[in-house]
Image (cartoon, rainbow, N blue to C red; front, side):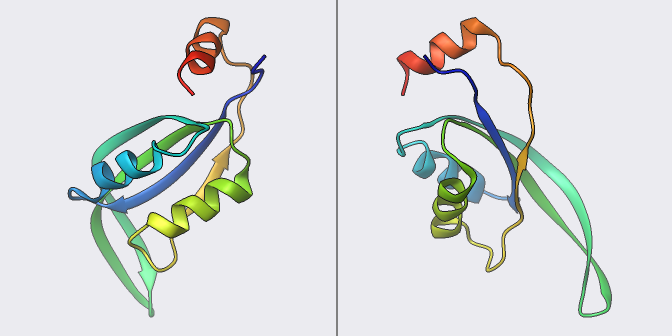
Amino acid sequence: MIEKINIFYTTISGNSESKKMAKKILLVKGIMCVNIIKNVESFYKEDNNIVSSVEDIMIIKTLLKKEKVEEILKNHHPYTIPFITQIKTGETNKDYLEWAKKNL
């Protein structure tokens, strides 16, 4: 029985890249859902300058471990150095776990 779903967060350039990557990574067994939050304005430092860009946030729901998700995202991500982090979670509701088990 599936007991825990891992959730990962990454950002990607704010155009059709997020949809393309979502469709590619959903082909991997163990990834069951990708949420895309569009048009987030990001500010960051690069080469001693403050830069802004419009990005999409991707939230990935999976049974896979961090090392495997990082490998998958690095292979498909357009950024040279993508931000990838795991969000620590508690227990997932049983109905969603059952749905996830049926749809792997």
